[in-house]
Length: 253
Image: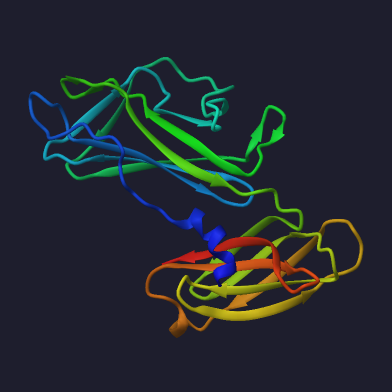
């Protein structure tokens, strides 16, 4: 499945904080860790923000408003393409988030790649996340900031609005397809093994988007103990090469 290595990049969740406050002490303040993981899929990116209390003291984080964090996406020139708070109204009242020693909390936000002039092009982008807390217990703290790079894939012209449901080896997949021929293909793998070899799916003729449904079944004893089960949708060119690949997460283990 080397053909799909490009699309698997968005599944790699490397939880490495780029900013920490240092050891917990009266001089250095609380041991807080904050980071963002952008997970770029075919039609949207999911931002997962994680905040962890790495110290041995319970913490009460104070926020000056109901906005707990900010997320920005910028292109290589530094132009801002997305801002989480844009168009939103937040109550101007103090908020408190409490964290026990070793406890972590997370938030998720999504963006559909739409900028001022439409969908942003394929390429590398910078994601900047900032926690808006200004106090932790008695300590005055600076904003916690993390930056990550993410690769946004190009728009898929054949598959869209694909969703998967189910668990433990039984899955239903629904979406829309507009293939160049009267068929498309799929496989299922878990990052190490191909669970289902190439299957061909026939569709009706015509240039309009058509709904499709797939039922995927994998014996329970063949499911991975850990990892991610992924469905790969694709077409083949006249030369036989895989084109218009679209990965779909079926289940994480």
